[in-house]
Length: 439
Image 1 (cartoon, rainbow, N blue to C red):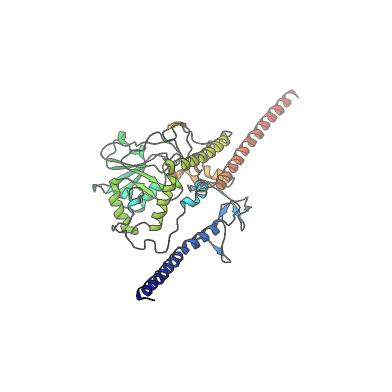
Image 2 (cartoon, rainbow, N blue to C red):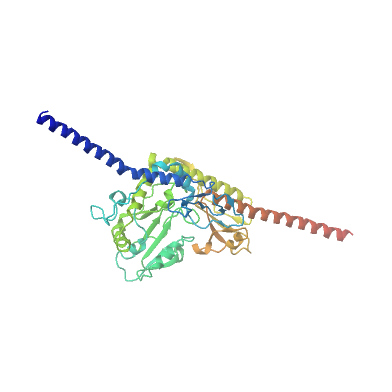
C-alpha cells in the first residue's frame, strides 16, 4: 500500500468521524426542543372538563400539574359547579379571546431556551428590540412625562369626563408629585368656566365604562390630551375613522388578551428613561412573546382574530340586552350604530362593559342590589358617577359570562314576579273594596 493511499484512507476515516460527531452532536443539541414540546403538550392535554386549565408553571401534586379551575368550578378536573359562588363581573380580564388562541396554539407558541438573551442589553446597547421599539412601549409614566415638558410653575391639572376609568386617578396620585394633580371631571373646569392653568385631559374612546366614543373637551395651548384607545378595536366598537391624534395609547391586552402597550413618539424618550431607571428594560421573554402574538394577530390583516372577537362580543351584548329589555328596574347604556371602516359596513357597538343603572329611587347602591343574587361588579362611584351605577365586565371567560347572564335573568325574573304579585294584590284590594261597598 502506497503512502498516498494510506493518507487518503486516513483522511476519509477522519472526515467520517468528524461527520459522525457533528451529526450526533447536532441531534443532541436539538433534543431539548423535543423535550420542551413534549412537556408543554402533555400539560395542555390534561382534561379540566372545559372549565379550567393546567399550566407548566402551575401547582404540582404527586409530581404532576393539576387543573386550575375557573371561578365557580371545583374538583380535581373542574367538573363540580359551585352554585353559591359569586358571579364576578368586576375585572376587565379579556379571557373571551382564549378560544382563539387555543385554535392557534401552533402558530402562537414559542420555545425559549435558558440562554436566550441573557445580557441586559441588545447589541445596539438598547433595552428594547428594534422590532418592538416602534410598536410596544411602556405607558405607566405618560402623565409624568407630559407634565414636565415645560417645567410649569404651577402643577398640571389632570382631568377626565365622568364616568372615567378610575385608574387614571390612582396613577396620577401614585407619585404624589408637585408637577400634577388629579382634578376629577372635565366639566367642572372647562374653558367656558374661565379656569386657568395647565391641563392634561384623559380621553378614553370607546369609554371605559360606558362604551361611548369620546372626543377632547378642552382646547388651547395650555391643554394637552392623552387619547386612550385601549378599546378602539373592532372587537368592541365600530371604527368610524383612523385614530390620528398627537398622543395615543393602544394596549395589547385588549387587542389580543395579553399585556403590553404602544405610545406616541412625543414622550417616548422621556418614558424610556423612566423605564430604564425603574426596571432596566422589559424582559426579553416578554418581548419575544409579544412579537410572536402580533404576527398571529395581524395575519391576513387581522381579519380572523377581529371577526372572532366581534362575533363573541356581539352575541354577548345581544343576550344581555334581550334580558335587560324585560326590566323596568334596571337599564344599560344605549349605543348608536355606526359605519365601521374596518368591516366596511354599518354595525352596532359591542362594548366591553355594561354600564348598569338601578332605576328605582330606593336602589341608591346598585352594587348592593346585585349582591342579593351573588353578582359583583365595579361600583359606579369609582368612575366619578353615582352609586346607582355599576360596571359589569363582558370580556371574561364563557363560564363567567354565562353565570352573569343567568344571575341577571334571575334578578329580572324576581322583578317580574314582584310586579305580578303587586298587580294581583291591587286587583284583590279593589275587589275587596268593591265587595264592602255593595255588601
